[in-house]
Image 1 (cartoon, rainbow, N blue to C red):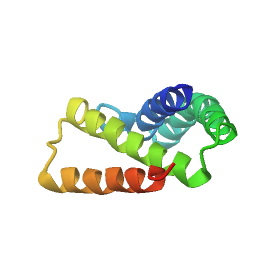
Image 2 (tube, helix red, strand yellow):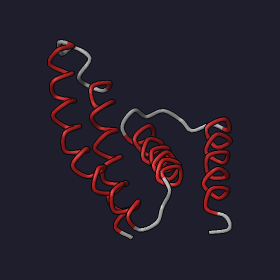
Image 3 (cartoon, helix red, strand yellow):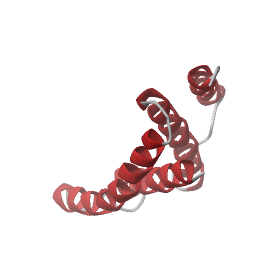
Amino acid sequence: MPVVALLIASNIMMTIAWYWHLKGGMGKPLLLVILISWGIALFEYCLAVPANRIGYASGWSGAQLKIVQEAITLIVFAGFMILVLHEPVGWRHLGAFACIMAAVALLFSGR
């Protein structure tokens, strides 16, 4: 589905834009980090805006688009957290993720 693929790609870009500097970029000036992040986020917007327009035109509600985006964000960030930041995933992470997945199921139930 193009909506989900675009949202995944946009979330990868946004995660990079927000968190790339935490590993290896902490010594860079904050203004430079902000400008680089804005440049990355521009490409993220070029993916997220069409994803939401396509989804809405296909019958998804705004709430459905948002909750799917949040679920994708958690999946993408979990991978980034493990692979780039080398932080462990604990039971609280898994519990929070399960709650978000339950919210996705609730919004799409009866559809």
